[in-house]
Image (cartoon, helix red, strand yellow):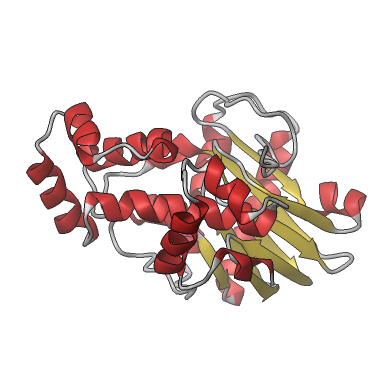
Length: 284
């Protein structure tokens, strides 16, 4: 049995999803100071998290990489991404948690808000962007003392904070300002992959579930993602394998079984082809 990566609903509390339009804010110190300024690796299946570092140092693990961040800076963690933080003692800043449907506040699919929340990343902030983002965070924290669910002012401030980060123009290797090339069929395909990638379904299964032909589905992913449908499925399998190898004590054989590979040797070859590494190398 593979040890699961901890799944947190709200920065360490519970597991149940919440209603749409949820937002929550707290200071970095609120929880990390209780745990020697370290939050171990975990994931949130139903939340996007935004870390604002005003002062101090943060060592940020986001998926397979660990990055050092000096304040002022920000981290955006997409839903389900494995992440963890280690802060210098006394680090100041905020943690904002948003429900995954917060992106429905966007004006449309080309709104950079959608890409920002979906892709995430780490970046420094300019002094101007930092000052504005931190002012908004302080206002949210004060308002939250009288917070009621779906409070429109609280959610509007949260949106303003995210848009401040978008406007900051920080570089983190992601094309933050680029509109996502997507449509509802592709969104549904991604959802189906998330549900069934461990079962190694064939392309006919996904095409039939979407009411498409194999050819149409292949054209859709090629035009909008630059890859085949099976490429997308294999990338999701490789990502989950990488998470399990790096963040649990599972052996390669156990990970192979967990992800539906009957032959551990085939899994090893698959992993090498997808990541350029053998499973055992993730232990280093």
